[in-house]
Length: 589
Image (cartoon, rainbow, N blue to C red; front, side, top):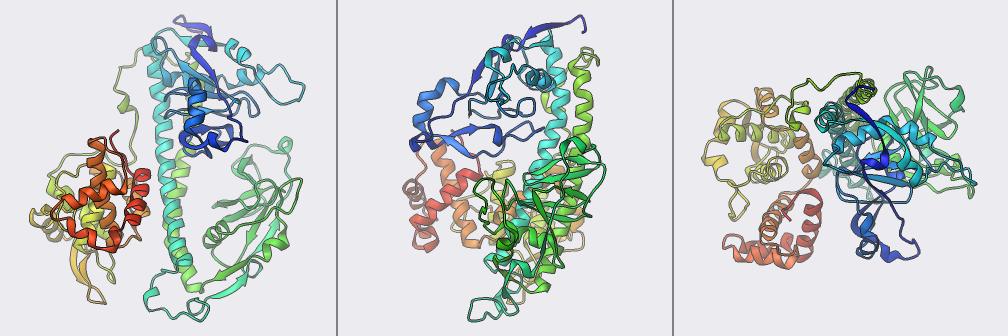
């Protein structure tokens, strides 16, 4: 141990709080807005919890408010999956009794450093288990607090160590968010084409008496795939290698050999019944899963199976009977449409695999540095102090300043590339709403959007130069669609605009816009933009978000009042828009 480091206990780091589970027999304890994080919500190796199953209610909050965990606190599982799962809070939340949370004394200890300190000391937590009568792994709060650890006495040294390691985790989180957006894009396209049946060319399609497009049919799952049994591979005989081992919960380890050549589709048979996983590379499915083989696109089948509900056929251990699965009724589209969907997904999956590969290398590098930094082997005290923001290396090029009109021209071009086509060129009414929503999410620069009749509307895009710049630069061109619709499609230099885009904004923000609004009608976009603009005003005035208050704002605007005569601005639609927007965008509190 280096001279500037000292030995303390976990309890010396600050306040240690153990969570609670409110009684389940009282439903009033749940369903509120206070996140309730449990070990099952945590992912091994991931810093933050992004999705969780339950929330505390206001009643539960009042009863357990002393256990309310602030952002930056570090939670470590001490019952059950001890030595494996932990997380750092990125918002106020509650945990259950299986988690001990450290709320650091920030005068002495850097909050991010504490997370990595506990990560490297997870084996000590695991070994602190004295054994229980039930045999369940359990480390008491007193034993947890008594664990001895080594820390640098200088908080600045702690911060430097945390900055180095956080740089890797921030990149990993950024990639995971992009992967999620890619998955949502494919999922929403599947639903649009095969559930809502708004596939390319649906406007002229002929539908039969069953409501199915011509060439589609009703079939059984057995007609489109074969479910093959996985093979047992016990933990003690696995040798860590390059091939993923799949159980019903997903990847459960790696092995030096594979059973099935990728790409492959894995379906949970025991445990997580009907869970579905897609693997692009060779893999090893164990005996708790099926793997599917088919002549159809496995990407299409992945989303098809995700849309099905499977029944547990085993009272003792959840299980999926193969014959029961085979008898599931499905709708089988024509092969050409399935092929078109596969072609749409292919580039998304390439990007996803590249991001997953990046994350693999980032984790490996971080995990090599972690023990060396946390044991003081690498001297960081001589490193220059830099702002925390400098630790993140963006995937895109650094943002550069440029004239606002040119940046808007680039945005128009990229919106045209994502939302326009020769059949349906991107019209001005549509792109102005999309650009408004993009700015709201990406940089919140919406001061040029005025409350005009079709607003929020930015008149400068047409009269201030951006449209002209995009046209003259040959990023876009005017176009007339098959049905007489007019607007823009991409032109010969669209790739130049795409390169400029990554100088000013994140590509992931454009991916987000496509995921959320690709299939919204012009009226729906106008509704969302108008309601959002009204919510911003309500937020600034600290007025409750209700449909009545939003409609009052619309009514008070001379150029907006006529909107209230349209069906799209009904009370129900406004209420629905409010619910969507408060989950999608941020508002001042």
